[in-house]
Image 1 (tube, rainbow, N blue to C red):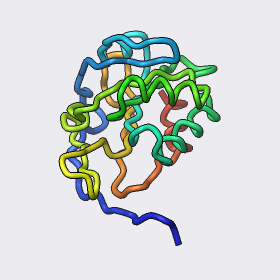
Image 2: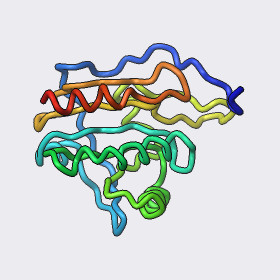
Image 3: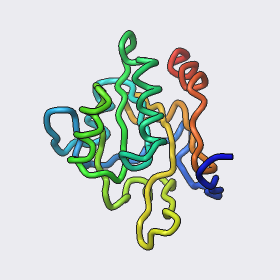
Length: 170
């Protein structure tokens, strides 16, 4: 038996394949600093995998970023991988350093981006606190969605082989 409850997240009203992903501007954090950047700034440099994850320090975030780091899809492909959660820039900087990640993470403590993407969910037992449900969007240079996966329960993880096929097919 798991030491946590599996939570059904219900339906999401997220953007679908073929639609344009909403643009946003938030602090974008790496291991050295952060600065405000827009999603369109990132995608302008080429295809981008946008990964919504739980707050830093939660086991799902650690698991997702360890898996992405091990698969290293961006090492031999024209692909940027960026994350987004409600964690602060300080928390993101710590996660990036502790995990030895070369990825940048958007900080959205008010969870407004997840609201705009239709993937926000309230955290059980935390009045007024929400975070994005786990989600992955593969975007082209114009932010057109080429692949979308959104969790239907918590915790749930994407099929990484399916994401890899989508990356390879582009």
